[in-house]
Length: 320
Image 1 (tube, rainbow, N blue to C red):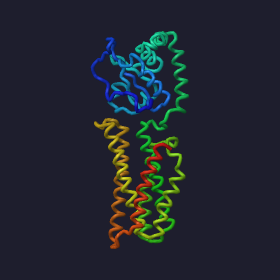
Image 2 (tube, rainbow, N blue to C red):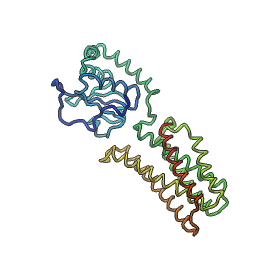
Image 3 (cartoon, one colour):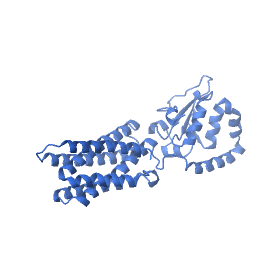
């Protein structure tokens, strides 16, 4: 079963809920970004008794879905269970609570709940958590969706830096070189800021390819002159504006009340980057429009290739 098939609540019910058996519901907070964890939870969800449990994917849910006393970092670090009285248990005790609710695991749950045995089970769980680091998809602490977005941003800013380096390597036009130098400084700043929130292990493994593609995207139009350079930057930044807007919309959907400081800090970063990219786009458009000749078919075709290539690169970066 895919992670997307896992049932999860948007927000735990504030009032006590009971299953058909009359037993109060549990709320289980699991790490859906860990493939082993998500498969185990999916197996539990298919069992009789699973309907008396609320399943919350802590890697994807809104912050308020975690309830009082539990933040995302803690929920991702260990399995947590909230009992009907609001108390939280984690680790081996959490597994025991889940198993006791599922008839197929009821005996195992009673054994796991035996106090003298619990330290042994907890030690085994700690060993599993250490091994799990090699399986867990995100290397950043962000949800898989956010991490994928940031991976594309990092690759995009890497490519943008290379675009302007390619322009500067080829163009001898004073105006184009000044244009490229200013934008290179801004894109380098963007790259540094994104690297601060996306560790090296979470970045695209194809960065050398993105650097080469970016350099060629800058150098080739620079051979053709200022109009081609400005048309290229306009095409790139038009796509980037849309790409950043989509990410901002996703963050707003995850945190509609804007109460998660980490998500809101990221939102501010991405919005600031987007505003810079829009300024680059508008500057390129103004420089292009200042020249009276209309764009020819070759330049229009090149701009379309640049835009579609950017979209294709984003798709690849989400996965590699």
